[in-house]
Amino acid sequence: MSWDCGLKYMFSVSPVLQPGSMCFLHDKEDLSRLEMVQRLAKDGCRFLQNHSKGPERTSEPQCDEAVRVCLRERGHDVLVLQRISSEQPALSASARGGGREEARYRRYVVVSGTPEKILEHLLNDLTLDDDQGTTQGKESDTLLDDFLLTYPVFMSTSDLCQALLGHYCTKRQRGKEDRKEALERKQKVLHLVSQWMALCRDFLRDDEHVKLFMKTLYHYVLDDLYEHPSLEKDVRELQKLYQLHRRHTVEDYSPQRKSKALFHQLSLKENGLQSRGTQRETKEVLCHVYITMDSFLSMRTQAGVVAQELLQAVAERMDVPLAELVLVAVTYNGGRLLLQPQDRVFSDSLRPVGRLHVCRKDLGEVLNPFTDNSELQQRTARMLSLNTWDVAVALTNFDWTIFDSIHEQELVYFTFSRHSSSSHTVALELLLQRCNEVQLWVMTEVLLCPTLCNRVQLIKKFIKIAAHCKAQRNLNCLFAIIMGLNTAAVSRLSQTWEKIPGKFKKLFSELETITDPSLNHKAYRDSFKKMKAPKIPFPPLLLKDITFIHEGNKTFHDNLVNFEKLHMLADTVRLIRQCQKDHMGNGITQKSSSEVRAYIDYLHIIDNQQTLFELSHRLEPRA
Image 1 (cartoon, rainbow, N blue to C red):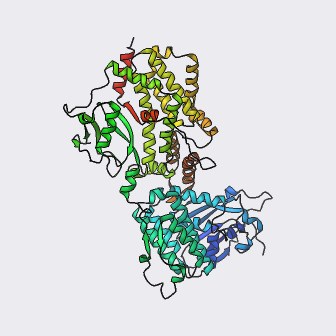
Image 2 (cartoon, rainbow, N blue to C red; image 1 turned 180 degrees about the horizontal axis):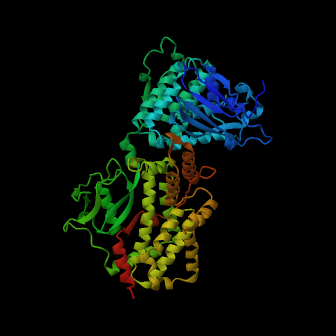
Image 3 (cartoon, rainbow, N blue to C red; image 1 turned 135 degrees about the horizontal axis):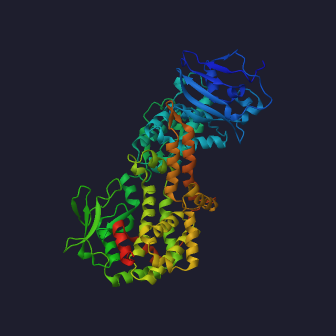
C-alpha cells in the first residue's frame, strides 16, 4: 500500500486500555520511529487513515523543525515532541518493525509535556547496547542530562522516586510484554538511576526518600535476578553507587525462596551513607569574626569549628594573648550570647549562631579599630613584601577549592527555590561571598595605607595581582580586584592615581575592559571563551544568564512543562562542569607559599561603606 506523505494519520487507543488517547503524526516515519507508538499498537491500538486530502507532496524534503508530534489523553495535550536529525544512527527501521531505511536517522526531542510523560519518553528514547547495557546516541544522553539537572523545577525528588519505581514494576499493568522487553525496560530504569546517582549523589545522600527508594529498588532487582540473571551487573552497579552490600548470590533466589523478605539481606556500609553531622563537620565555610564594629576577619574553617579554635586563630592574627579574648555571638533579635570554649559556632544549616564578635574580657567591648599609625605602617609593609604571583596563586587556590565543589544543580536551586533550599547552594553562595570579600579587602588595604608612596605601590601591586589572576584563568578574582579599585572610595583618590606609572594605567585599562558590561559583557565572554579549562568564571554573570532564561520564558505552557526552557537552563549550568576539568580530567593545581596562604586565608575586611568613605576623605580631603 502506498502512503501519501501529505496525508495525516492518527491512532485511537482501545477504550479498555486508555479512553480518549490519540496522537497526530505527519508521515509514516513518525510511526516507525516512536517506540511509544509501537507499544500502544501492540496493546490493541487501531490505526486509522484520515481521508481528507492534504497538500501535495513537494520535491523538497519537509523541514524537521516543522514536524511535531502531539500526544493527547482525555482531550488534553500531555506530550509534544519535535523531530530532529540524529547525528548518530539509532537501531535500523527494520529492527523496529519496518519502515524505510532513512527513518533511523530521525529522533524526537521533548518540547513540552507533563512530568510523567517526559520521563516515559526519556526511558523509551534510551537505546541500550546489547553487549554493554549502556546507552548510545548524543541526543538521548543530552535529554537525560537535561532532565536530571532540571527536574527539581517541575517535580520533587520523592515524586521522581515513585515514578521510577512505577516504571520498573509496571509489567502487571502493561498486559502483553515479552521477557526481552521487560528486561530492557528494567535496564533502562536502572541506567537512569545510575546516571542520576552519579550526577546528584552529593545532593541526594541525606534525602530520606532516596534512601528508601534505593533500598526498595535494590529489593526489586534482587527479586528479578532469578528470571533475569543478566541483572547481576546492575546489582553490582547499585552496590557501587550507594554502597549496598548483598550477602547472597543469584542461585539463592529460587522461586520457593523469592517470597521471603529480602530487606534483611541488605546492610548499609557506614562509609556509604554518612550521617549528616559527619558530612557537615568536614565542609569548609567562610567565617566572619568581627574585631571592630565595622570590620571583620574572613576565615576559612571547618563547619564543625568550636569557639576555642576560632579565638586561637584570631589571637594569632591580631597578635593578642588568647587569655584576654572571648567570643560573643550577637543574635538576630539583638541578644548577646557568650560562647564557651567548646561551643559549636555553626548550626545544622551551616549558618553561624549569630554575628560573631571578639571582645576583651576586661572591657567587654570589641577590639579598638586600627588607628595606631605604627600598626598601619606594619600592616602595609607586610602586604608590600608579598610576591604578587604568590598572592594570585593563593587567591586562585582558595577560589578553586570552592568552585570545584559547586554542583551544576546549585544554580538551578539558587534561581528557582533560593529560600527553601539554601542547604543545596552552600558552595555557590560561598563563592559569591568570597568575590564580595576580595573586593572589600582590596578597598580596605588601600584605604588603610596612610602614606601616598606606599598607597601607589599597593595599587600597582593589586593591578599586577589581577593580571596574574587572569593568567591563572581566575576571572572571579580578576573581577573582584578590578571592581575594588573602581569603587568610588578608591577611584576618587586622584593624587594617588596621578602617581601610577603609565604602563600600569594601560594594564589596568586592559583588565578593566574585560569587566565592561556593554554588549552583554561581550569582552568578558570573548576572553573567557578563549581560555582553556580548567578555569573559574565570574559567578554573578552566570546567574544573570540563568535569571534571564528563567524570567524570559514561562516554565509551564498550558499546564505542560516547557522543556525547551529547561534545555536552555541545562546548557547554561553545564558550563560549571566544562570549566571544572580539562580534557584529561585535571583541575587547577598550583603550589602556594605557606606565608602568603596564611595571610590570604585570614583577610581583614571593613564592610561598612560609610567607614570606607571616611577613611578615603581622611587620606585625601575633598577640595
